[in-house]
Length: 448
Image 1 (cartoon, rainbow, N blue to C red):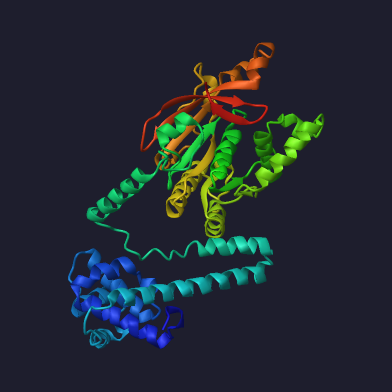
Image 2: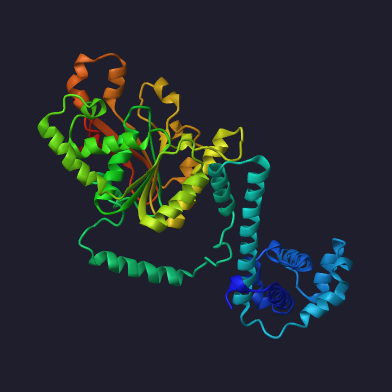
């Protein structure tokens, strides 16, 4: 019988067996304690009994019929569950702790099923009582479903023996490969040398002042990942999908971006090139979501779907400070910290690198040396802790341009010397990489 078909009577019996095992078998207690909480039990009496068992276990006290009865009595609930006689009756179900893992899963999945049904009912009530539109209803359902963690009761603890075995196997597989990259290629030689490609599970923060080239750099990463046959998700909270596509077309066709923006002065040869580039770009496995004000929960649920449907292996989020909060907190720094923490969790669960763009605070403009440092991250909070890599873009000509030296920088403006500053790299070296930015085509490339 599958778990979804378990009747209420059968579930009641399974709950009794787990409680009986908990009161008779100390060896089974750790599995039970890590696999279930009191609310996972359907029967209200069983909830009270299990809560008593949890409290005894947390105090390192022996779990027996009498100790559980005493613990429940302290809360004034012993009579309501039928006294110690009820505990004795339940304990009679004990024969062996064999099969406890299956019993735990039965209870846990039945609990998850009830939570799922309750979430649907809550959203249906909201639609009926508050006349919620379908889009808001879908968002609400996604938010509710994210609270149901089907992996919560799985034991993720493994021995170092298992870790060493899997590590050696991975190294042996890498040794057989002809290429040295183990992650998503960026096609920037020095960056790939330092990182071995953008690694699965990593949260990468890319920060710079406005107009320094953050989005262009992120699109370069997305394009290069996609042309190496990796599915790419792009969440653009500021720029519509059409503009992002135009930038990628500019990169591929090498036609001046102004011509594509205005549709003017495009030669016949350039039109031919543009149509050829369209065929290339249209085949790229890039999926763009340009929902403004999207929440991190929505990003998470959409990413899970994209991973399932299109096997995306890389994600760009543009940008962190535009992600909406769901709790309405006035403390934006705390909100940003929660968002970065959740993005890191998603990267680990989906085993993909996530590049998240971030603003810098204006304080950098007040310094003589305007090269950014980690304390310049806006609303930084826990970003420094959560991120595996923190990169900054810096261009001298950005500030010369702002100072009004237009003539001096006309040539520089075409191809701009850019510093890619790796301020944090959890698993490797830090430092500054010198690259070039071809602004008219939105393309970053190696220097020299």
